[in-house]
Amino acid sequence: MPAINPLISNGSGTSGKHIKHVSERGIACEFCHDNYMSKPTHMNGVLDAGNPAVTIVFFSATNPTGTWTNDTGPGTGTCSSLSCHGSDSVDWYSAAGWTLPTCSACHSTARGPRRTVLGSSGDFGVNPANISHHVAGSTDPTPAQCLTCHDRYQHMTGTIYLKSVDTPSGNMAYDPSRPSTLEPFCLGCHDADGASGNKNPFADGRTLGVVPNMAGDKIAGYWNASYTVHKNNGLTCAGTGSPNTGCHGNNQTINMHGSASKGLLTRNLTLPVPASSDFNYAYYKLCFDCHDNYPAVTKEVVLGYKQGGHYDVAWAPTPYYTAGIQSLFRDRYISNPANY
Image 1 (cartoon, rainbow, N blue to C red):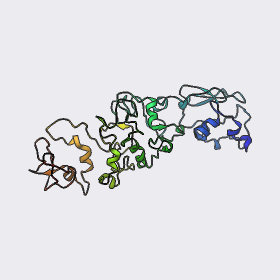
Image 2: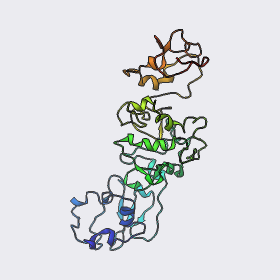
Image 3: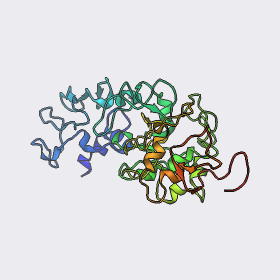
């Protein structure tokens, strides 16, 4: 019924308006008309002529403090105390423009199923417990840095859209039920040309391929090589969400911003390994934990070597010995360039 279709009757291009929220940003009706179908004020096919006594606005749990005020008749009404608008109270029928808030306005606290990303308990530098691998330093990323990876297309619907740097027109929606689908997005930056030729995409002083990120632009090449045992055995960058299916999960929870676990994030790994002549299991916990009971490739096979052999030297101690060299973890003896 065109007469009561809000996309027709409620105008376009101004600060509120269904066209802005629904058509442009893809926000579901239920965000502002929560459970409306069962409300006693449901208009049921009849046009609301602006009667302020008929309440049709009910904000969902994403805006628990939201209120609809200043409704005094046709063409009036204000959205107030909405987390998505920050401290602004916006007249729905106003012709004034409105600018999206900074990332921190929404992401410094949890939002429904979304964890806190910025601020003292977030994923980045302000939280001393976490070590981000994507934005260096002791401060939270700027909005410009966030937008290196994030596209705000329909962002306020709760869907995360990521920029595919090698195919800018192919931005992808992150599916939390299938985190392994992130792999092309990850490898788009971690290849020879970085982020479409930019090896310092966050402008934070860190450059892919340069210390301390020496391997940052070689990961795609390593991962896609024919001899990559991890990939050939079904692992992916982020895994499936189940334990031991990917490299970058913090206790099997996907957090691609970074985490308290340094190095690859499936398990702990202390990097750089402290300069010490004594072997410490904790320094290599990631490797050992994953290979502790791995049927075909035990930690002895990967990291042990033959007692009295070429690798049994004082400056490279190991707690593991094998009957002979059993893997290609090291394929040549450093001082004697001969095959095993």
